[in-house]
Length: 458
Image 1 (cartoon, helix red, strand yellow):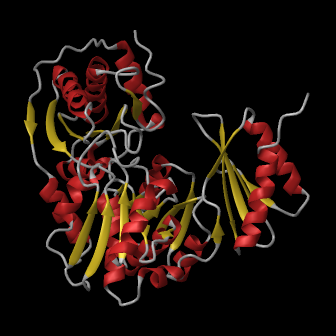
Image 2 (image 1 turned 90 degrees about the horizontal axis):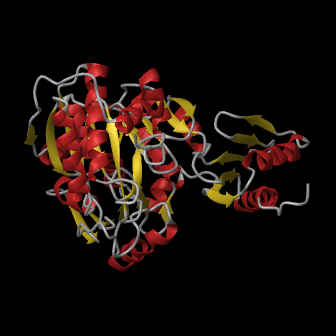
Image 3 (image 1 turned 90 degrees about the vertical axis):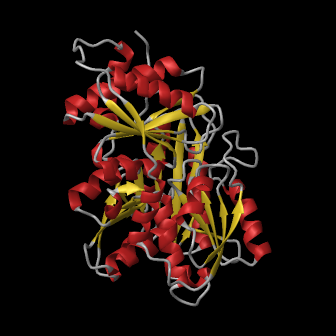
């Protein structure tokens, strides 16, 4: 019996190939997934897609072998982004599995799994069962048939669905630099944004799972440098950077300055509220306080959640929210099966920019009201102890606290910070926001001084 606890994590499968998993493991996970979705919903078919990594095709095919061995059919959507897989699972009404390690380095691969309709499968919603069955890799049930494997190209349908949600045909001409980071944006952007009044300047559209130019992780500012430079050099109106599996998008304005994902969340929320088909907007607790303020100003109802896609999607289902955003640049849409899609978020920003005449820096200025630190990670041996020390310091200053996700501290002058321990590493993650840059810097440095203080003798 194999141990897959280090491979199958809270939200997905993620590990080094072949050190942590290989085709045999993929085959076992495929069989477990097939048995799970059959027992869970009576599913008879699943859909798969894969990114451009060298290991993705062999792993996805081995997974399919495991699925069909359990009597379930497989539809292979082939090369695609993660949100293309969600489209396939939603439009076909079948469970899905996407083979990608997103922004991780080349030696990694993984699987993101979902139910029919792109409903997530995570630790609390079936992933533990799938792991246990894959570890055992034996079943009492004898299938009455071997499943079949077929192929279906869903890229055109994916593009058409996105166009039905955001019509870009009437926008003013825009010059758009897109950095695909050698990831799946290089496959989907040319199809989705073709035939529109957009001049696309491509950066790193060649699909290459070795990521020869930079990591496909735009959350790291170092990976935005090429995009920022190209936007200025080409006199572009906007820059877009997709991560490896293109389910996240980061935005750069015409001056080459990154636009906060919180500002993008607020901008898209206002557009979704204007449709008049719902009022609830989801945001996680480390997004800017500007987001709930702006949502309320436009007649919406903001709902605050923990960090993580499973919490966002669960709250969207519970509240019938029209949209949800995270500061990590994941954006979720009710019209897209409550799934996250970087492409649809990018199209909303392009529409907002192209439907009026101001530059992006002016358009987004009203959505960025406060100074934020971004997420700062600190390696600590005792995360709980350091968090308790921080709380004790601020208790004497009239602060208020909540523990929805880590420790959130709100101060009387409107400044706040959140301190969260990583689930997988010895890290504390700090996010600080304040009315101005000086106050944010002062508060950030003060909290970090406690978090990073050397451990004294006990």
